[in-house]
Length: 582
Image (cartoon, rainbow, N blue to C red; front, side, top):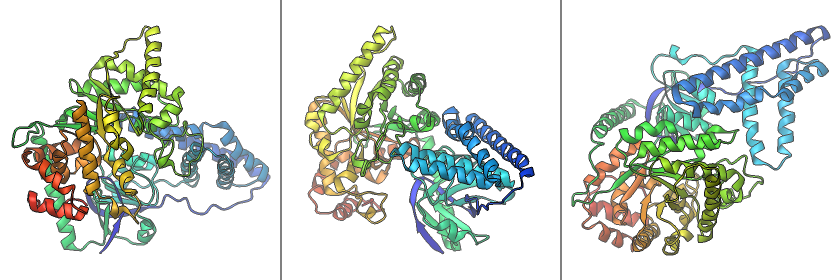
């Protein structure tokens, strides 16, 4: 038995047979061709391209039918490459000029294009190489007559293990008897990860070298825990039984929680909380009411950008999504965050320079204010969406009051334009900010005068406050939500919001951990926002707590020296049987 640690990208447990997918296309040889075979080789290439185009088209239609047009748009990037006449003619020119086989000509053309991309200091062009690489792989497969096997012929559940997995491959494989993914590359915001979540399949990323390690092994059983980022190969029987029990318990608990999801989150001493839903994809809207959410606490609008890439979403596409969000949440609020791009999230069309440290660079509100030409499209749609219900607009990565004031100026210009065009909108929408930078947290008494609400983004706030990248295996253990400094910061934000009489909530992952619920309530928070499937769990936890002594408990903890001491104290004081995450 051997255990690997990766990044938990899509939660859940999967047990099955490991099937390694080699997405590499193998060695490509240069084969000289006589003059009289050139036309036949050109025809072979054109036919392979056409087969690939049809295959991608079928996949797009299938995804559109099963998962919606927004997700299907992922395949447009590959289709665009195959429609590029300069690219296709470049390959054919190689065949004619050098009298070589199509595979070699294709590889040479892609290499030349990539070299030109590399010479240009524009990150979005480098990201286009990913689409080019995937298309090259498909065409070579077609030229060689290679097709991915249908996994339905494998008995039982299958866990896919791959060095890399393109969105089309994830869709193609994910609808078979596949129960999970282990992928060496990728990020929690990659298209492949989005598809895994949409298919409700657990996924673990960043397990370096595992595909090569398992490539020569057969009849290999595997367990993955998409919440913990754990991969276990060759599990012994007791471990398999343990995870089967956990899986069964999880299914039973989910059903029980679902049945109780309509019960209100009221503490033992009678305080009612709001538990709202974080949304990434429109496909999750059905879950908002299904799991008993009190509105949408966070819609990450950048996912609309990612899904529409390489095209920018139009104003009407923005508007349609926002209308659906607002009408689903009504009469409760739908909090829509403006683009939070930059950092590790792509912003191909907006980023014009490569930054040495993008996480501290042009991202969030900084990026959108720097490119009002693009940002105004989103803003016009947001303003027009105000007529559909209770829309709250939220700005990410705010650090200074001037950013809010500049936003209000841009919003005022947009409203003037809409009014001049005779389009309807409301001016009384609520405007808030994400508090996710320590400097913003420390001046929330000042920022509270600028906005109507705060939403605390703990994912970034903890990383910035503790100077820890939680995706960095060398320092990830220092990512400690219970650090006394974090407790003090959360208390300060809530106190300043209360003093100013504005709303405050928390939409980071800290809210989704039921072991943290007592702490957050003790900090004074009364509104939490989590992924839809976590709502019943958090509501149940709220119903088991009393606020009577929680604020006193948190005050005591914030004066302890370490996160470990806080954890020990909480377990003793609250009777927790399981350690909180330190």
